[in-house]
Amino acid sequence: MAKQDKAASVARTARSAAKRPAGKVHKPRGLSLHIGINEVSADAYAGWTGPLAACEFDAHDMTALAQARGFEASTLITRKATRAATLAALRKAAKALRAGDAFFLSFSGHGGQIDDTTADEDDKLDETWCLYDGQLIDDELYYELSRFAEGVRVLVLSDSCHSGTVTRAPMPGEASAHLRPRIMPRAVGRRVYQQHKAFYDDLQREVAKAAGHAKVDPDTALANVVVSQRLTAIVKDFKPAVVLISGCQDNQFSMDGDNNGAFTEQVLRVWNEGRFKGSLAQFHAGVRNALPPTQSPNLFTLGPAAGFLQQAPFTL
Image 1 (cartoon, one colour):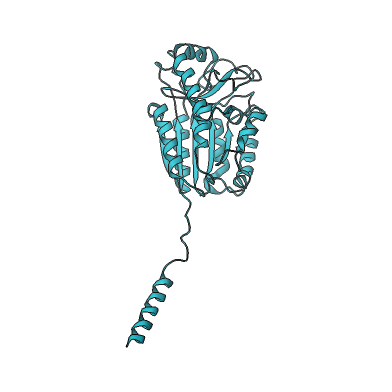
Image 2 (tube, rainbow, N blue to C red; image 1 turned 90 degrees about the vertical axis):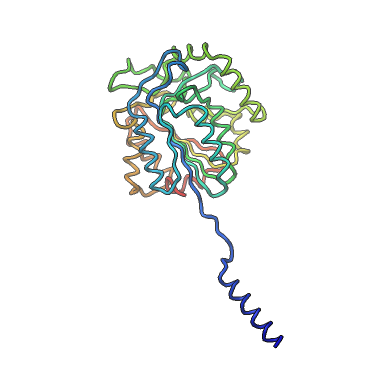
């Protein structure tokens, strides 16, 4: 009887083991954040509101694209696209995602500048995204991206102007209903910095301290200037695989439109509701070829991104 009980117990154990998976495979998770800002707060920008037409459309369209690809998408539109909300969303995603997961970030709005106080910019200027109630410095964005875990794939699409270096071409005439470059005018940028100098100076020092005093240069990635030895020295410690595609070259401007920004319009056209077949690198080339020579999107990578570039766009 004891032998029969033992045999029955062994059989039950075998059946139970057969029902259990040999090993739980991690299913990639995707989170995304899409920012679209049609105007900024006059209080934060020295009376300037920088009206644009299509940035909110861009954010909603990127949200729909992300959701169609299985991402859990969040959208921050104009007044809700604050510094606090943006940083909170980035940090929440960095904390939630692990190796094999993906994060998709898009921004449509003005690019700006503040004086560089940490001596990490050759042109003595830090480039920014103009969020509703204040600017997000490139150092901050770089630092927040560096906090994602090793093995996380991060794609950033930025439909804005970033660099204000001496190589930038003159502004393409006065802005009009049909000609709206997505950049905060330099005179406005100077006034904004002068009025909020203490805030931005302290912010740069805090970011440099948090990053371990590393001479980070996210501007190199986001504004598409030549890679410096300083950036190369810290990329080896950059754990996530990051691909950044900007709306234009350093000496060009990203243009607004009536329904989409020029860059976002071609991103959607080339993607063609998922009919595009090819790698992320080929996707960038297709978008670039679809735009005129006056606006040529650039691509930059951080971390171990070679394999990421060979994947299909927006892949979980």
